Image (cartoon, rainbow, N blue to C red):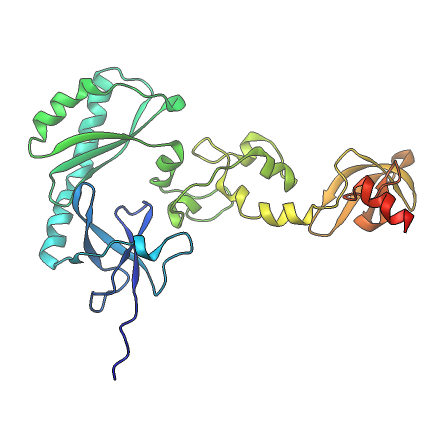
Length: 294
């Protein structure tokens, strides 16, 4: 008796820097990472690249919601796709010229993208301040030039713009994280930098997109967990060497730097310090009184 065929879920990307979507590819024979396949979308059939393969979809994806891949693309269809991609740069340049001629200040055309068969042409743009700008003025000349394509505009954020650009990261990596592997962007807050003790100098925590760097999220949870039960910065505490003020936290070491009398500084573990009121950091007053009663 033959074993039942294994489930195969394919992570597909419609654009080199786009989000990864998961489809059921169990019925396809010999599908590999790097193959191109056709799938049905809300805008018709589209061609996408297989970038991931697994027997189970990610935890946040329901297998029952995964649509099936239609089929693998043929060599001829890939040539057709390549021919339309070669026209994208020319379309992008034409759109930028029209934006400049119409005096649409603050509008930045990020890229142009044709659908597989060229029936749709999408211009991705960003505007300063993320304000919506009316681009109807440049639609007629674009529609006249690309008669066989439905022309549309899609506004994207500054992080998406930065993702499509090449360049070295501030950390020294030859390619920034957003261009290298990130498929979606999570909210980043200044609190993440504070918890990790990172300088709040805008030049040091801001990426080329003008927003807080995505990497602030990477170790945030680790630092937040390690900081539990530690005294807050600038808080007065009692130590084995006397009273002082917390001037620096070292969560991963589980220690704090305390400024003592006469300009002295010393490092103590979280167990060695207590607030000036006699309470251990992270211990509620009710818990402390209960402990004393026992």
